[in-house]
Image 1 (cartoon, rainbow, N blue to C red):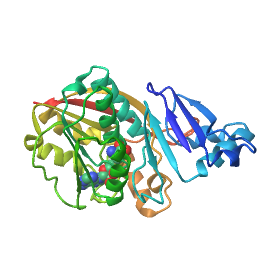
Image 2 (image 1 turned 135 degrees about the vertical axis):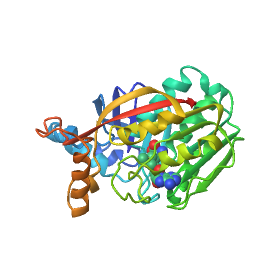
Image 3 (image 1 turned 180 degrees about the horizontal axis):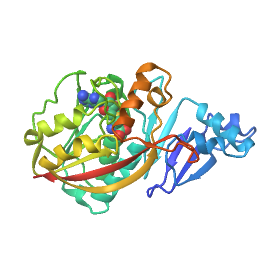
Image 4 (image 1 turned 135 degrees about the horizontal axis):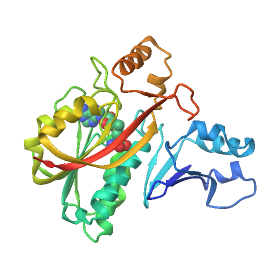
Length: 316
Ligand SMILES: C[S@@+](CC[C@H](N)C(=O)[O-])C[C@H]1O[C@@H](n2cnc3c(N)ncnc32)[C@H](O)[C@@H]1O
């Protein structure tokens, strides 16, 4: 299936791709068939909105989402992702797309991307954001000198490299498969550092899953002198779940401004469904810190919400 989000985040269209079309529209030979268009998306898979669709449309959309292959396209840049190829990798999600939109507003519309010759993406996941930067730089008639991607999941590195392969051009692509508890190790300064890091805190956080802990923010702060020169730009994602803990320390080191703010559901069933003692304790902890936005009526379609803020700035 293909999920296509428009550049201003106003619509999300879901398509069946050529192999899938006959399973949704008998006799159709279309290469791509749009199944539904959601307005003002808050998730890439919005179960609440899908459940409210008229029954026949709902069943077509659900059938579409059952196909394991996924192409995610935003602002003309797409990535192919499938759980069987890249197990456990953070697929492009709504926060990825909000981040790409912030890159568009902060670096592309302003043409500041022209000045950027090297970048580091810490925790690249599927590689969407790195590919977005490489593709947009190319469309300005230029290429990056260096792109450095890191992740603790070797399948994330694989996904990123597979997807970047077609547009790498003459850019030097480095990757680091970081060990789970390893400190951030850097050998040069970059014109741009981006990180959409794990951002859900809990006491004694594990450092081995894509959404948990504040470790990477702390490492970036610790390594700021090594990572950034005077003109380097840092862009990161602050969730309302992480912001109260980490923003004061970030502000000591960086002069950050908000590029984009979005209110989105917190949909991570491993935590939010409360199906284990550990997950229930975790939710209790987030509530005790008053950082979990809760819609007790569930009229919004989701119980828990967060505010995502993409910030950008330079070292002080
Ligand atoms: C929230 S996901 C974001 C992925 C991707 N950048 C995106 O926006 O779609 C966070 C990523 O950081 C990676 N990660 C977690 N701890 C890390 C570490 N210590 N070093 C490098 N990457 C890490 C995870 O494996 C995951 O891919």
